[in-house]
Length: 442
Image 1 (tube, rainbow, N blue to C red):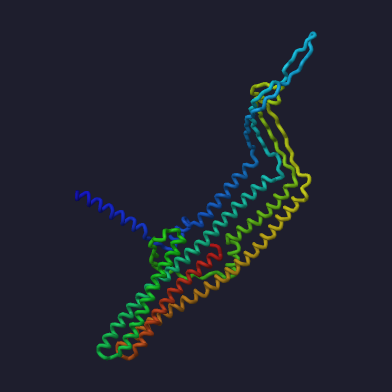
Image 2 (image 1 turned 90 degrees about the horizontal axis):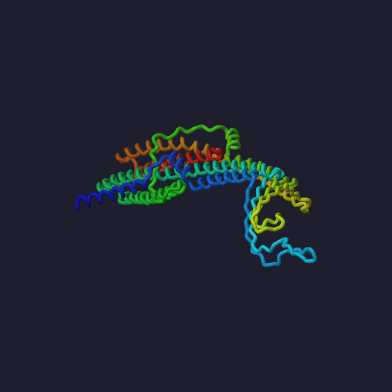
């Protein structure tokens, strides 16, 4: 009994461990982007739109093929006298039933319809469906580009607060060490109580700031989880960066502008939609042409109206029709529809030009933002080096009683602020790089 109980307990502990492990993830930026592209809801919606466009093409392709339809029915007729003819024969009259009174009518009709000429509508609709597929695929690429930036932004925002927490914890340890020294000095009567209280307030302020940073980490995690379409209770963390990538030089603004105009999927999608508008004009103009259909019918009925005299039996007959439909006059409605399509084309062309202008503005803003953040990195690194050296000297001087307590506090704050600025500069530069890639369309 005890053995079974141990097995059951071990099983539940193992299950709990597995469930707990499933809710904890450590991911790199590349892993986040890969996972997001595979699981994000927005990407799935865009992918389904591509699938829908392809299915629409399959539907349009069937419009040029023959269609087969079946029609069947039963009719109960009211009673009428049969159609009879009376013929005089040898001084007497003889009646003959020409058409009996049939009260039940059964009919089955099989119709085969083949378009012969539809004013090029079928081919034009095929072109429209192809263009719709291409545009939806570019829309999908656009969604992927936006998601890559959103994930990168969320990732580096989480990096900023996570690394900021480490800097803050290091700062708190420094203050605690300083406070310990002050308490010793106070016990020896070397400083006033006010000096101790001043640093104690500094420590409390840093601890409150640490709590706020932890809250910021939770919010940053939620933002990243939302972009990855992961459960909100997942404990996600970032894989440690072994080495920071070397800052790359970017091409000139003119080169990037040209690249963006040739790469941005939104522009490619809009260019395809311009072609769709042109095709739509041709489609409306196709109404000026007649529609010609070849129609074949097979009628299997009881009675069959083509069989004379009428018989209460099933008989089959067929017919073939070459049908022409042509609108002679519709109060110029076709011309109005064509003008509407031309207006839609003009609007789309203007939208395309506006989009190009917007892309160029977006690229320039991202380019300048990246350049500014790039220049801040070197300054932030130098500031950290200078602040640490200043703290080292100040700490030694303070231990010898050569500087005031407030001078050492200033040195500690300078180290803390410089490291926070360095973390912020790294995060901002990575975000600026991701924004520039989004503006270019990569």
